Length: 212
Image (cartoon, rainbow, N blue to C red):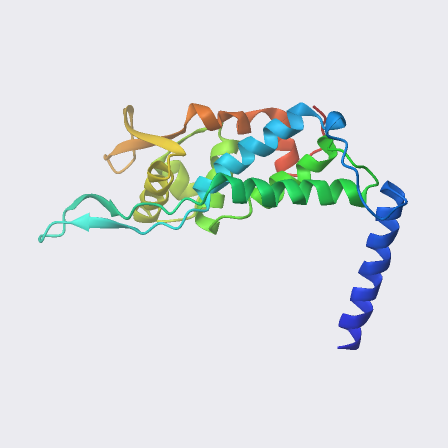
């Protein structure tokens, strides 16, 4: 309990100091005019993607009575409203700016925002999404099996999860056949989310340093 009290006191002193640094009246007059428009656009794009990737969804393989796979059955994904996600992420960005003595948003907020956003989803989706980003937005089923060390069934389930959530498309790749002789499926990021393939975004996501 003593450590908790000490932590609260230290945080209070720090926040009080930061608020005074931003504005001596202990209140913040946010300077919207100085917010970087590109930063605001990335925050909105991130929230749009996050709403889909974190949505609760039940999905499972469907088989005939003889055990033959016939596809996937799934519930309707419960995608939360855009206002709630945008408010939470915007407050996070503003809090980061205040800690660093600013009352406006710059690209310095983006590394934190991207890492929080793209870690706020189930691990299997996060793993596949990261792999898609690293693979220029396209992957074969066998590549997912090998790189994530999962079974064919698990790879297909995660692929179809992203498809149902509206993040990616899946189609049969007629030009590729796995070693087992079966035809390959290929998953591709939808065009509206391919902005994550930009080099600066990948750097912010996975630890590099860059600027807009």
